[in-house]
Image (cartoon, rainbow, N blue to C red; front, side):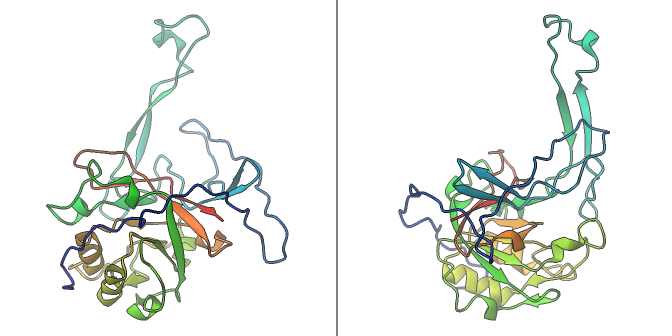
Length: 277
């Protein structure tokens, strides 16, 4: 297949996900326990920038949060606008909500940010004029995907050799570089990136989605952006700025990263997470 030739969509081979999910266990054999809940706060109030990493559901599911928290004034990708969050309607201004009964108020926020903010997904339309936007991109390429975690060696090119002997067919391929630990420091610079040859292997192997925990899946010094070009031409969504991939304590997990169904949407933040089996 040509490097820039679009491939056929890759589904889940008709498989459904109806079974029970086992709780992830640490290396010492003990069951992981979710920590105390981190509560959010209104704009202007200082809160932790670290999302809650683990949660449980019905005592059986281990949910791993793989997203950066979105905050007013947070760092943005170079050249994009700084995110600004504003109060449109506030609990602290009941005089402006006279249409409601006494004691009844609502908080409504207004958000201004570029689509490539925090942890986000790229639709094919982000790179290719005729590619699917979020209004057309099927959920089957974004949620409930069996995942495979690929560990790489920090900085520099991530070549085809990392993927040749891995079954990526109909899977979300998450690439762990640990570059996310630089978030809030020197994160937004070119570091690890996936080479064109590696992307060819992922396309030919039938990957459904590719995610990475660094500033850009491409070499930021390469204006051709081959990784975006190849993967999105094949209809493979890209999730960038993941975090906490080291928390995936089992090789068996399912991945979720759904954006709103925006007509003309190209890139948008997501609450990416994994469920360990």
